[in-house]
Amino acid sequence: IYTSPVPSVPLVSTSVFTHLFASPSGDPNTIGGYPGSAKAFIDAETGTTLTRAQTKNLALSLGYGLRNHPNTGARRGDVVLVYSPNSLSWPILLFGAVAAGLRCTLANSAYNVKELTFQYTDSGARLVLTSEEGLPTVLEVFKQLGVSKAEAEKRIIVLGAGLQWAGGLAAPDKPETAGFLHLHDLLTLGALEQEEKFEGKDADETVYICYSSGTTGKPKGVETTHRNITSVLQIVKTTFPELNMGVDSVLGILPFYHIYGAVKLVHFPWTRGAPVVIQARFDPEKFCASIERYKITMALIVPPVLVVLARHPAVDKYDVSSLASLFSGAAPLGAALVKQVTERLERRRKGKGSVAILQGYGLTETSPTSHLLPVGDAMRKVGSIGILLPNLEARLLVDGDGNGDIEAKEGEAGELWLRGPTIMKGYLNNPTATKESITPDGWFKTGDIAIRDSEGFYYIVDRRKELIKYKGFQVPPAELESLLLTHPDIADAAVIGVESAKEATELPRAYVVHANPEKVKTEAAKITFQQSVRKWTQEQVARHKYLRGGVVVIDSIPKSPAGKILRRELRERAKTELAG
Ligand code: 4UV
Image (cartoon, helix red, strand yellow):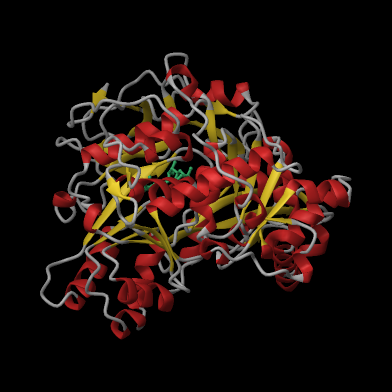
């Protein structure tokens, strides 16, 4: 059993809200040790700013509104679903819901009606907080579930885009959102005197429910507790003083509905007093423009962003010299790419030294961070996810036996297992899946294959689980496979990920068996069919699940005697096909 080279840090048992907003000095203008007037969140487009005190007060107001508005009347433990791209509303709605003692489930803002319906019903959500652009999809979800218009109006809260109400103004009445509650309506009723408390063992109650497919199957609700979040915040804050965010400003482009964005952008910078500049999605031009405008010193990214930074002309067009560190995670990062971007940005730094390109690793199930690369090791250990964080234990189990009782030797690859206070409570309403992923003595099986070097640095070298990652987003093959099986001309299907070095990501690729092989005898017929399957899929899934890696007609799907898809065989086959 491996432990961290860093000594364990003391942990607290409180709600996430109490942890973030505590004022040890007793001065109401000081929040978490930082002045309440300090900037906390900034909208990149408009420059609208929330101070720390405003964020806290608005959250307590929203908490009051959620509990006391006659339409909502939420109670401790109720689930609210958030369906919105990044915006200034996010910190208020997350902290407000937490102050009211609610649980939040975060949905991908690109989800279509079917995908959103699944998460809404599976999570048992009572209320939906949606962006204006998401409203038609939410209404369609309710319609298909047979919820009346009058009832839907009670369950929906529309988030305005520009946060006009931060300045005391009501959101403008738009015909398309008229009749629905707006965030503003819930902010003007009063304010909670204090937040809902989660002390002691109550800290093990769930606060966030993000979705992950885990090692196999369809997406499952991950029950992240107050203790999980307060632990990860305290561990990272205490262990990495060199991530000196007190003087940093952070660019927030990662989606807040993914655990990586939610924790590392909405929660973590707060604990360091660092302002976060919020941008709805990654765009090379806007990314560089924001670095110049807000003198950004740190940005959290996924590997495909580095591909853009290595080549895009916007990097030369704007003054990006303030950028001191880039933090990559959620998918494998190649050393060559790191070197390329480091060199390019070093030239743009005008003698201010090089940019540290760091890596972190984690999973939705580990709240999420378990490994980080210290700044001082950025160049020495390129490609490493870093060291194990304190308060966590790790094991590496040799792949293959399924019992997981053969430990890997030093330098040998094995499946990474983790144990500690940041491991999720379990999968929501799914004790079977929870049991399969967490052993009785608390070890969580990541499904990733890792190597640990003699100095305690870890490298992710492969993935044992079937999960595909497109630009950091989860693409569960089981979901695409069961969709493909509903196609009238498809008899069997398997989906795997193939590497795109050009885009630094995996791409989902489908192998399909035609129900009537006679119809795809010729090359031309095959191509037409493959294209039609690709198009058909696009009409039914969110963008990140498109079959960008192609569709291939095959005689039969390779399977084990037990009927399990032999994905490794398909991956080998794809390598040959794509090399040819
Ligand atoms: O559940 P999930 O979608 O969660 C994430 C979380 C990512 C991070 C990354 C860095 C952080 O500092 C942090 O706090 C959170 O992506 O997907 C989990 C799977 O993504 C792959 C791996 O297969 C996980 O099981 N993955 C995540 N980070 C890395 C990675 C990485 N650095 N290198 C390779 N694979």
